[in-house]
Length: 73
Image (cartoon, rainbow, N blue to C red; front, side, top):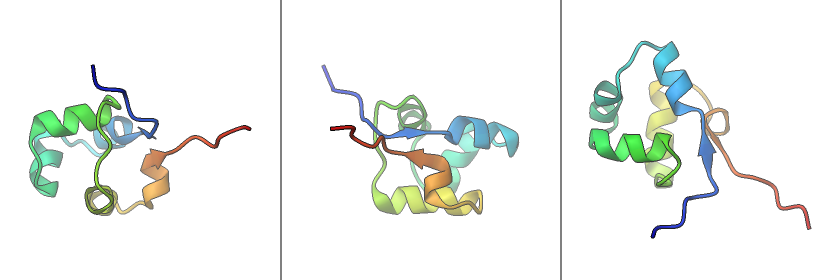
């Protein structure tokens, strides 16, 4: 079983607010719809390059779309 990523994201909310389907966003950033679904569900962390591409589609900073938890040691 694949361990889920600790990176969370708000892509689905932002995508829906922008009126884009998963297929449309996937096409704009050059990935399959299945890859985009896995990213939205937190089962896959995108490469840094893909994260930048997604953020540019929405004209938002990466950290508006992707979050990584701070460790509380």
